[in-house]
Length: 204
Ligand SMILES: Cc1cc2nc3c(=O)[nH]c(=O)nc-3n(C[C@H](O)[C@H](O)[C@H](O)COP(=O)(O)O)c2cc1C
Image (tube, rainbow, N blue to C red; front, top):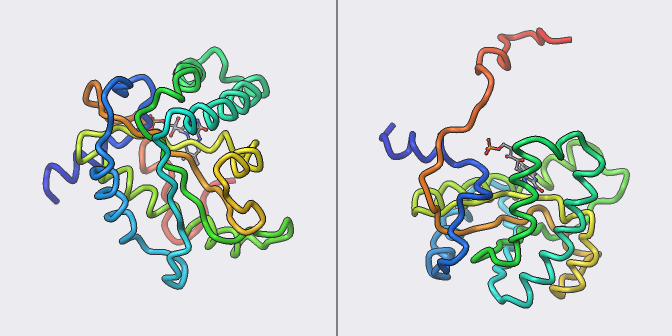
């Protein structure tokens, strides 16, 4: 493995405060990252993913309003408000409309409330590898990203704002994109040995 691949894999983390909000992101760069993203595996190779690039200030402001409301409600119902994650999440929510670009990932279709886990897994799992590919490609080009889902509490309102046919298209995640203002450090994670077992489940 090359050092650069190692660096990209270990430093593609959630960038909230470390984005340069004043520097625009070249749409051609986003297209390059999305092109790489669309090489990802997906269910039956249907490529039912769709990506909306949001860079119009009025559109971003509309989405950000729903995001902020959803984030406030999420935080109020959690024990995260007084944690570094809660604080950086709030900082991002407050400036979301200033983000140079937002990428809204969608999947064609909508699961019913009784969809079985296998169906849910292949539905959402047909977008996440592409999203991660997008984030890695962006990181490799000096961009930072934050994958978010909290606005989905207001998915219907955002669909209306963006002209998305809610009944036929599911929003999966909103990725915030901007140039990095400083290189991110590797994230803190537990030891890998704690989450691996050989042949038999070993946790409660
Ligand atoms: C499915 C998913 C949903 C997430 N939703 C949000 C979100 O709505 N808002 C946010 O600020 N971060 C969100 N995150 C980012 C996580 O909070 C973040 O990955 C985690 O805290 C670890 O951060 P780190 O990679 O910088 O260590 C989400 C991450 C994932 C994978």
